[in-house]
Image: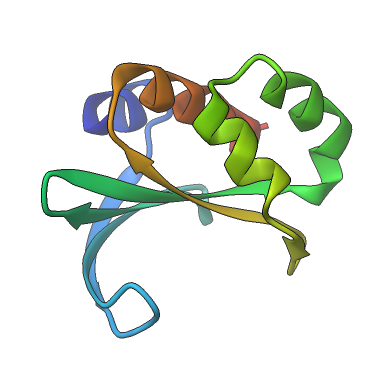
Length: 109
Protein backbone atom coordinates (compact mmCIF):
# COMPACT_ATOMS: atom_id res chain seq x y z
CA UNK A 1 0.00 0.00 0.00
CA UNK A 2 2.74 2.46 1.01
CA UNK A 3 4.79 1.75 -2.11
CA UNK A 4 1.82 2.21 -4.41
CA UNK A 5 0.79 5.49 -2.80
CA UNK A 6 4.29 6.96 -2.81
CA UNK A 7 5.49 5.61 -6.16
CA UNK A 8 2.34 5.59 -8.31
CA UNK A 9 0.71 8.74 -6.96
CA UNK A 10 3.82 10.50 -5.62
CA UNK A 11 1.91 11.00 -2.37
CA UNK A 12 3.79 12.32 0.63
CA UNK A 13 3.19 10.39 3.87
CA UNK A 14 2.88 12.28 7.15
CA UNK A 15 2.73 10.49 10.50
CA UNK A 16 0.43 12.16 13.02
CA UNK A 17 -1.27 11.47 16.32
CA UNK A 18 -5.02 11.93 16.30
CA UNK A 19 -7.37 12.49 19.19
CA UNK A 20 -10.51 12.07 17.06
CA UNK A 21 -12.80 9.04 16.93
CA UNK A 22 -9.91 6.73 15.96
CA UNK A 23 -7.42 7.83 18.59
CA UNK A 24 -3.80 6.99 17.96
CA UNK A 25 -1.15 7.20 15.30
CA UNK A 26 -2.04 7.44 11.64
CA UNK A 27 -0.37 8.09 8.29
CA UNK A 28 -1.89 10.69 6.01
CA UNK A 29 -1.01 10.49 2.32
CA UNK A 30 -1.28 13.83 0.51
CA UNK A 31 -0.69 14.97 -3.03
CA UNK A 32 -0.80 18.60 -4.10
CA UNK A 33 -2.44 19.61 -0.83
CA UNK A 34 -5.20 17.01 -1.15
CA UNK A 35 -5.63 14.12 1.26
CA UNK A 36 -5.67 10.85 -0.71
CA UNK A 37 -6.26 8.63 2.31
CA UNK A 38 -5.42 8.12 5.96
CA UNK A 39 -4.19 4.79 7.32
CA UNK A 40 -4.79 3.82 10.96
CA UNK A 41 -2.65 0.89 12.18
CA UNK A 42 -4.72 -1.62 14.17
CA UNK A 43 -3.90 -4.91 15.82
CA UNK A 44 -3.81 -7.56 13.08
CA UNK A 45 -4.77 -5.20 10.24
CA UNK A 46 -5.15 -1.54 9.47
CA UNK A 47 -8.08 0.77 8.82
CA UNK A 48 -8.15 3.19 5.97
CA UNK A 49 -10.18 6.33 5.43
CA UNK A 50 -10.78 7.40 1.86
CA UNK A 51 -13.29 9.99 0.73
CA UNK A 52 -15.44 9.20 -2.30
CA UNK A 53 -16.11 12.65 -3.75
CA UNK A 54 -19.69 13.71 -4.40
CA UNK A 55 -18.44 15.50 -7.54
CA UNK A 56 -17.54 12.13 -9.08
CA UNK A 57 -20.56 10.27 -7.74
CA UNK A 58 -21.68 8.83 -11.09
CA UNK A 59 -18.23 7.46 -11.98
CA UNK A 60 -17.58 6.17 -8.46
CA UNK A 61 -20.95 4.43 -8.22
CA UNK A 62 -20.25 2.69 -11.53
CA UNK A 63 -16.84 1.60 -10.20
CA UNK A 64 -18.23 0.49 -6.81
CA UNK A 65 -20.39 -2.14 -8.56
CA UNK A 66 -17.17 -3.94 -9.56
CA UNK A 67 -15.75 -3.94 -6.01
CA UNK A 68 -15.78 -6.63 -3.36
CA UNK A 69 -18.73 -6.89 -0.97
CA UNK A 70 -16.96 -5.05 1.88
CA UNK A 71 -16.28 -1.95 -0.24
CA UNK A 72 -19.78 -2.00 -1.74
CA UNK A 73 -21.39 -2.23 1.71
CA UNK A 74 -19.22 0.54 3.13
CA UNK A 75 -20.19 2.80 0.25
CA UNK A 76 -23.91 1.95 0.42
CA UNK A 77 -24.05 2.38 4.22
CA UNK A 78 -22.26 5.75 4.31
CA UNK A 79 -24.07 9.05 3.85
CA UNK A 80 -22.61 12.05 2.09
CA UNK A 81 -20.87 14.40 4.49
CA UNK A 82 -18.83 17.49 3.76
CA UNK A 83 -18.58 16.83 -0.01
CA UNK A 84 -18.23 13.08 -0.08
CA UNK A 85 -18.67 9.68 1.51
CA UNK A 86 -16.02 9.12 4.19
CA UNK A 87 -15.35 5.40 3.90
CA UNK A 88 -13.63 3.60 6.80
CA UNK A 89 -12.58 0.07 5.92
CA UNK A 90 -10.47 -2.65 7.47
CA UNK A 91 -7.84 -3.78 4.99
CA UNK A 92 -7.87 -7.50 5.70
CA UNK A 93 -7.13 -8.98 2.29
CA UNK A 94 -5.65 -8.22 -1.12
CA UNK A 95 -9.03 -7.71 -2.86
CA UNK A 96 -10.10 -4.96 -0.45
CA UNK A 97 -6.69 -3.32 -0.81
CA UNK A 98 -6.89 -3.45 -4.62
CA UNK A 99 -10.37 -1.92 -4.64
CA UNK A 100 -9.35 0.84 -2.23
CA UNK A 101 -6.26 1.69 -4.29
CA UNK A 102 -8.47 2.02 -7.37
CA UNK A 103 -10.93 4.19 -5.39
CA UNK A 104 -8.01 6.40 -4.30
CA UNK A 105 -7.28 6.97 -7.99
CA UNK A 106 -10.45 9.08 -8.17
CA UNK A 107 -8.88 11.41 -5.57
CA UNK A 108 -6.04 12.18 -7.98
CA UNK A 109 -8.24 13.26 -10.91
